[in-house]
Amino acid sequence: MNRLLRRLVKDDDGSTLVLTIGFAAIALALILAVTAATSLLIERRRLFTVADGAALAAAEAFALEQVRFDGTAASPTLTATAIDRAAAEWTRRAAGALADVRVDGASADARSATVTISSAWHAPVVSILLPEGIRLDVTSTARAVFVD
Image 1 (cartoon, helix red, strand yellow):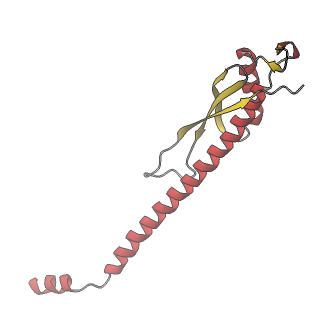
Image 2 (cartoon, rainbow, N blue to C red):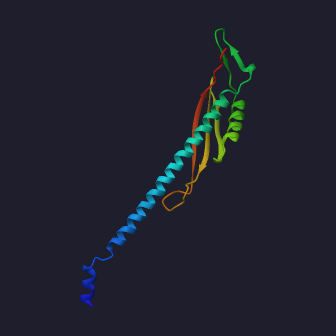
Image 3 (cartoon, rainbow, N blue to C red):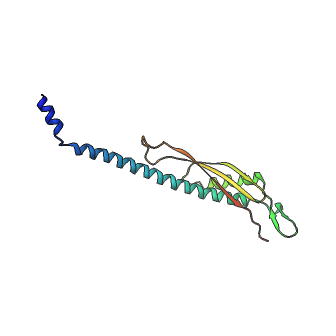
């Protein structure tokens, strides 16, 4: 029995199979992580595109009655209700395939509108290493310009 154990300890046949399986598992985990990171980046860029459009629509959401003239230049006055309505409408129309998109905030100062939008992101392949999903949020600002 001792002779058999010594021979098994010294015999290294089949040890490369264990290494191959280990490296294959590491390679698969790396491929899944890179795939998820790429998907997250693309989803965030798509969300930024929607947020930019919503901020632009909100910054241009003024009526002609809301334009004031100070003697040298004309400038629009933005209202919170018009900004909220324009941002929500743009987001609803432009969301497309983004999951669970919502406007988290829309605000305005004298001449610019700031819109915060969030969306749910899910990894393309759910594994032990990656979360099932996270919430992405982006903020975009656009300035209202009135050309006389």
